[in-house]
Length: 299
Image (cartoon, rainbow, N blue to C red):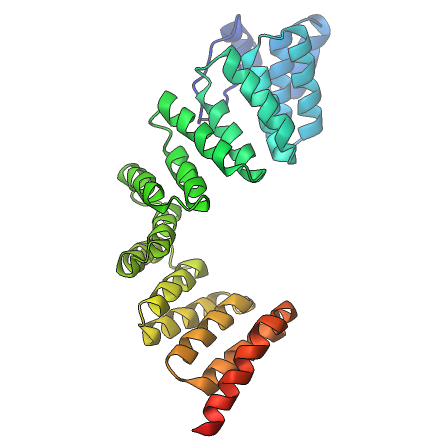
């Protein structure tokens, strides 16, 4: 059986060792699998193998055809349902992906990667309740699936359950202390809880791990503004702008930092640049630009 995602355990299939040995001896993998299928048209496992190979080559539709045929031949081949679900997930067919992945779970609960993938599909559908519950199941079956802590925490944060989100990000960081995403996500959750200094510290750790990522600086800048540390916020937004000059939100954020520091001309300049970069912000920023202009004209 072809190796499945690292997120799941690897169930053994009948004759998988012999088929693997036969394939390793062939350099032309897809041609070899097609020959095997021609010799043994009812070999569901060979269909699944070829589907996995096609999936790795990003031939999603070809892969789905093979997985579908494997399922027709052997409806209890859990890994074929799992693989087809992942292919559909890659194509953005989220409802169909969930259906396939849940069938894989019913047939083989040991395929813990199926629950993780189903959680991703539900999250992308906007089903945050369903996604966090599915990630919970994945963790119950396999506590070593570290990314599931992050993904479940993300879904809880979207449901405004920031306290539990922080707990999950804590668990992720115990296992992956160099995860930029986890430090950033925990900072976001702490900021939502008004734990400004904790958020600033977490964003700082994220920045130390990926100093080339502008989102680390802009996120910390937002927390610094909330903590009324405007000068430091301006400095962080300035770094974000240097890294990603065409992003309007960095200029808009720096404008608010300047405004809070009563630096009205600088605020207006940033907000006008944000509007130039993203004209859709005109309505949102027109009022504050006008108000700031009145402020500095009076001084």
